[in-house]
Length: 478
Image (tube, rainbow, N blue to C red; front, side, top):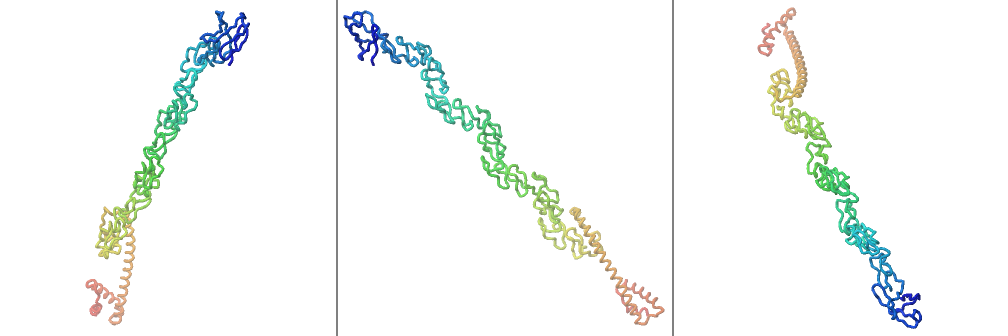
């Protein structure tokens, strides 16, 4: 490039060889021809004619970033835009990375950069440190992954220096602030975002501990992060998920407990063990801890024990005659009646010898077919001596009813017998009268007195011999 030179008020082009030729008569001493070679020095350059002791300065317009008499010097990199003054090279437009224009000799502090150090380093720079001229992050990025520029944010789940640190598992969805690492979307298993240092209280879990542990978890306890029943299940059988209900007849911790035998059908609530379907042999569902009253059994004690059971007592669950039978001989079923001649508890008592045919009532021992040698069936003159320690009030009542029925029957029999006796007497008298009339031995006038005497003698004779003899009495009367 050709430079322009102003010599003695005349503008000349400088040749590419760096020399300046002055034509004749162009300077005050026109008779001479002057030749000038351009020389480069630190402060300035000049073209010196032979007869001159002082140079004539040649003025030029420098390219940007250059300075000096012949623009042969570069402006300092400390100058903003790398521009400076023509002759002294001072940073007339300010400094770049330095703080004291125009000299620009004092470097910016570590967290400042740029023109006259007026810009603060980016917060994307780790520790806020950057290059004093370019502003790039010297120590790496904070929350960004592309040092030294640090313009690309961390991916989700990472943070810190160049995004090399993973967010804490305590952070919800493992999301955190890319610079501080704090849980920006809340905690998982902790209750104090963004620090997430306080564990959930028992019975809670999840996002900021807002979830309640499942009722399926034993004791209402679960993992504060996942909510899984790490302590086992309550009414379910597959920890920690607890999604399988206990089988019939089991309940409680991981379904390891059996339902109470007091529960009807052996079934109970899988969580509490309560007998929701009722009791078996007990009367107060769902607790089922009060036994049936005597004489009752079965579902909530609603069944009455069989009358075949001795003392009206039976097993509260099966209804079988646990104490023994009453009038039957095969406990506990009590289905086979006593053999003839036996009665009472398991047919262990023998009927009284006073009972006709050795037969008696299998329950109360009363002579149901009458007496032998006694006139008041079924009591038998007070009846059989019963074992008062084993005869129940109910049996006494039954015996009384049986006695009443037997008394009625006995009365009827006695009435019929009396009628038969009267009929026999009448027939006997009639026969005797007929015999006397036939024999002709009876006087009509004396017939009544003779007949009376005859009857009296006959009565005496019957008492002595218990057998009437008409022929003997007939001879005596003659």
